[in-house]
Image 1 (cartoon, rainbow, N blue to C red):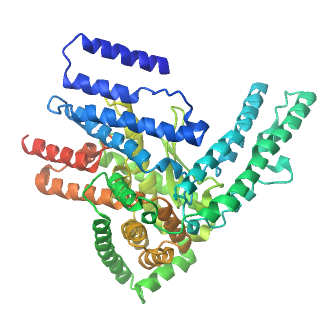
Image 2 (image 1 turned 60 degrees about the vertical axis):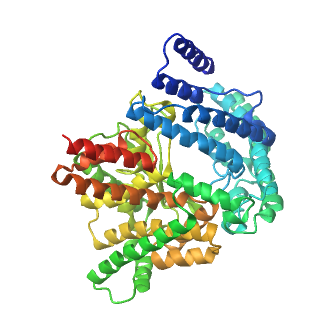
Image 3 (image 1 turned 135 degrees about the horizontal axis):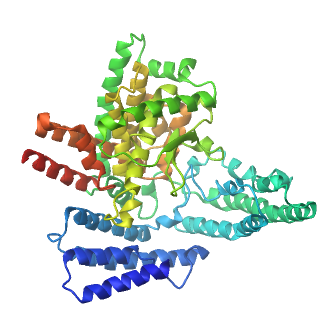
Length: 573
């Protein structure tokens, strides 16, 4: 495949040399260079040194290609090609920034790390001997994988980029559960407990003996190594400051992350903080109106306590929670044709968050399709049911499934072939998460919120995203403590205290990402008002959504340009 891509690139360049080169041809040649696999004389994931060399080489490549792209005249490009040029400039700059700020060393957050999901490899069933051999090879590769990831985290410690200790709660559970005295109880051993009936007894005994040695050496002993590393090296050397601005070059890095996650250079941390405060005040007034309409006798804080403690708002079983999420999903499915011209081909399922990561995981998330034969999945967290509010499920479903992430990401993957490959897999949070939050607003028009509490749930999710603007900038630019963040979130949202704490730790460990939701959603809603005002009776909600979605993931400035062009075209019809 690599040779084919390089041959295609070479042939394409030769072809161009024999004809007058148009701006479109030049752009296609630059994109072909970017999309062709780059081969280096070293393996990126073999060592920390190789990883450093890889990111430096990628940055050097990106600087050179970016200069070529900037010299390209846009006048001779189609609208789609202009979008491709602008998006590639954005992507190349992020590659340069990844090397500048060494983001490749920060491989761990409160909810993700290399060792959390390794045991999923044990979720398989053997049907023939070759599959057993292949799994044993996979196990044999684990020690090198563990050593490599530990080396990256050692690099983070050396550079002063280790995460703060405050986000690692009960972290010993993530590795201790894999350190067992009985190897046959290991999750890595699971497939060996159900060997095919067709295997002879001698073959089964032989496999079991080899498997016990392999799982002990390659899994259990590796988790002992992981335990020693975290307890003796990483956790004692976590950074002292909570916010990213406290690390070397941290203030510049945080501004860089604001720029990346908002796809704009027009916001400072102070700007975002103020937008957050304004949105919190606006949303709170809407929440107070619902409380008043419900004739609740008590303060805002007392109403939140009522929501957090009354059993009517919580599922009794994981099955009840999943069934409710599936019911909401199907109700939204039925409304989609009224609001969208193009719908995705891929279906989606509703399943629990994997048990291994559920305790420190958010309430729900979308997991996209990774092949032609797999669906997308809306993950619902069924861990700690007393913290999972039913009245927020409609808003969560709209965001993670449809019309949110599943619809948008699937359409992005199904873009026509004239769209370059790099754009098909591109995800920019301001666009994707902004669309997800807008989707929570949109389903009110579909009649999905059937009780005042469900509407309050939508507002508390919107408030949650508004609070993110305040607490993310608070911790990373204004020196807020973890308790300040928790207090602000718990005072202004109806999220359970468990969710507030896991979300707080997410914002600490992933600077800037939480800003993208509200900034993106604000832009989409502003554009909708602009189009409704400009077009009046000509406004068509299906066409509006088509303009936002039909070119796939774009920056907010590209989205605004497209909408301005759409208004002009409609007015001139």
